[in-house]
Length: 177
View (spheres, helix red, strand yellow):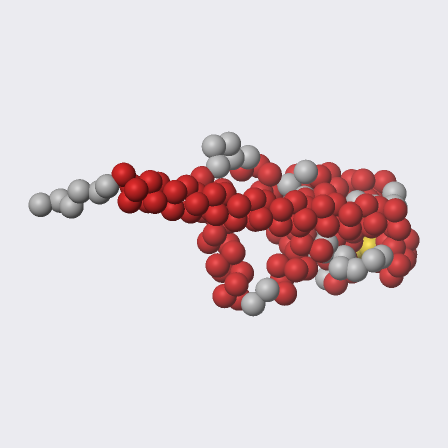
């Protein structure tokens, strides 16, 4: 036989449930504040890069990858930056116009294009603020493996709960969002 709950006991349970909902909402707001702090910090870094180097954060990252591995192909660079190949190609067009990178065709196979920094590009890398990949990718790279896996799992769950999902944004440089 179910136990009858008196009015005072029912009110206490309702109040406890409301308190738990309020605490959950407060925690959600604290997490939201952290997202804001992450994005603002990344934005400030991008502005610092642009002010100091005259290139965007994504362009600096691309140039840094070329400094680390001269002769990359566009597809390799796009993979390193986690962007679409067309996004990387457009970025390279701008860098080439400014004479910061150069493209060279391979001898046996003229279809293969390799990418290199010019002397001007190398100078920008030498003077650039660090981390050249950006503060968020750098911080993520420094997380312990277990924490990174957990964050990936939790963010995937969060994205899954969102009513609107912009899947294209996943392959867009953060500095372009």
